[in-house]
Length: 255
Image (cartoon, rainbow, N blue to C red; front, side, top):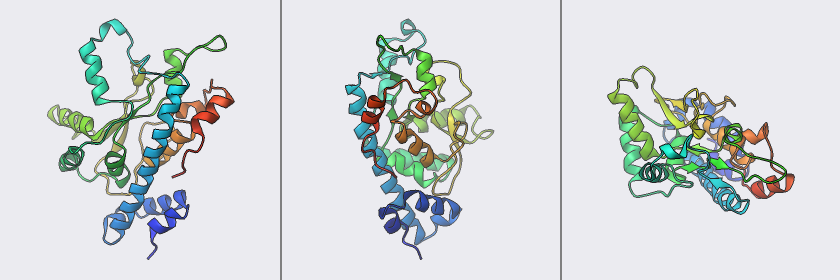
């Protein structure tokens, strides 16, 4: 049997992930499960490293985290702002309660794909919503934020609360899709088409991220995000200079 983790560590990142996805539910069978878990953990450890590189670089570039998130600043109380920043921080900190919430969530909705499970275990959450600084050569508005669609992935704690609400409102049974991220419009307080979601339950290595324009899996979506410094929309709407973009993405690890 192929040792997927060993091959992954040799640098065959995409190939190994694609093979594990193709195996479907078989990755949940022993002894393959332990090997697939090791690969998923390694993927998300690399993702976490990359986010740790990008956040301080965004600060250096003068990126204004949180700006543009509210349609009207006057409509948001300081208490609401603090609560949101606690629920969706720039880069979440894992806590001792994280495994408990993962267990509770799977108890409610069934097995998570290993990719999302290990995102929760190794990364937690991230929120790059904000605006790049304007200058005499360019201006960044809220709509520009929608265009670049910054990386934002909910924490398991917040997702658990959201799913509880869906179940209490009899919504989950009609649409058992797990919210992973708000869409590009809702990130900036515009009405959107609904969050990026994963259909549940999902016994697989990775799963399609639905309603996101790339029509790909969760891990591939993260690859695209990291390729573009946390802003997949830069692929089509790039106002950054070559120097800024190179600085933002330098030495980002493949995964």
